[in-house]
Amino acid sequence: MFTKKICLWSSPRNISTAFMYSFAQRPDTIVFDEPLYAHYLKVTGSNHPGREEVLASQQNDGEKVVREIILKEYEKPIAFFKQMAHHLVAPLSPDTNRDGEGAGVREDFLLKVDNIIFIRNPKQIISSYAQVRADVTMTDIGIAKQWQLFSYLKKNNHKPVVLDAGELLQNPEKVLTDLCSSIQIPFYNSMLHWNTGPKQEDGVWAKYWYANVHQSTGFEKQKTSERALPKYLESLYEESKMYYDKLFPYSIKA
Image (cartoon, rainbow, N blue to C red; front, side, top):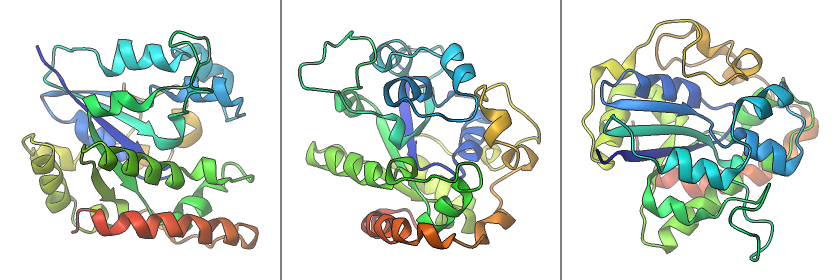
């Protein structure tokens, strides 16, 4: 069976996990939670909560993840991959061996899948991220990487879909319906609701990051989204907003 592959390239501290739960309600879809996370941790050396657990739970070689998981054919017609944009670490050099240990991921596989760029107001991302890790960088936020991915795809005549979390929360049914139309799959009302609690699709890192989404039953605005931005992160916000303002006009509107 040919499987349609959909990659959601999200910023962190977005509602991407809720989005994964939404697609998991579809009868025609298998979902995967951040398959490139271990690769990212290994290549960058980032010290995230549960780092060793993540490394032990997943394939660490990003090129193998692409070949053996993302581009694989499945028994269901749709495979949905929740991804963090910053996990797509580029090759360390143009001469990196394709099977090299710890090598970066070549981005040409993006031309073989449907891509969704999932953005959020960077003020909300940064404020939320700072609650887990005080040291927040542009790489952590992922918005510059999202713009780079968007530009790469457009340059190669491969039109990505842009989604904004704020627009999705205003009218989930309308935005999801338009999204499904854009990537040529049917919309199901079941995508709007799910049960509370941990899910079988969750990565081992869920206990560090998913407390709020485990309490949700649908696309709901979190009270923490209005959290104040720490003053020391204001310059990062201004830089991030430049990329957000470039991407937002392309997003599906509520």
